[in-house]
Image (cartoon, rainbow, N blue to C red; front, top):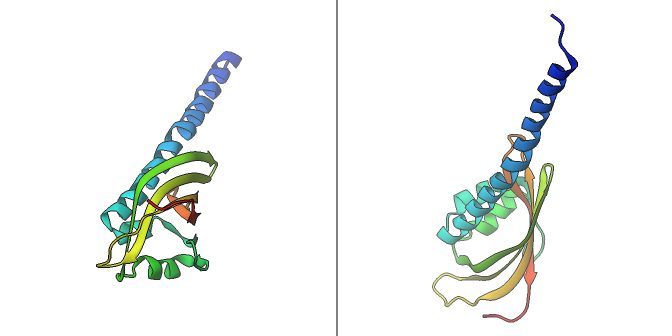
Length: 152
């Protein structure tokens, strides 16, 4: 059976368009789904879901504290039941994906206060670096934030 150049070209074009369209249209949605799940877990106080979205080798850099490395140490911070962590007025300022790495720049107000005490809201900004794990799931790899001005 002899295949014409036109048939071969058409098949290759369709295959390449299919791969191109899948990669560009699905990835932002999967990343946004992971981001939304992360912030919803914070809102609900669902530490199990929040921790599941961190990479095993993640780094957390909270304001006024040292670097927290790895899921074991991040778990100790997140699971501290003496404190309440909440955020409000979150805005994603910038988001971009390049292959298996993505980042977001965010602003919001947060409180991290002793359980039973009044919350003090701090304006902040942060950068999240996300990466895909071996299963293709987006995981938070770097979580760094700092003070951004006046408290609310």
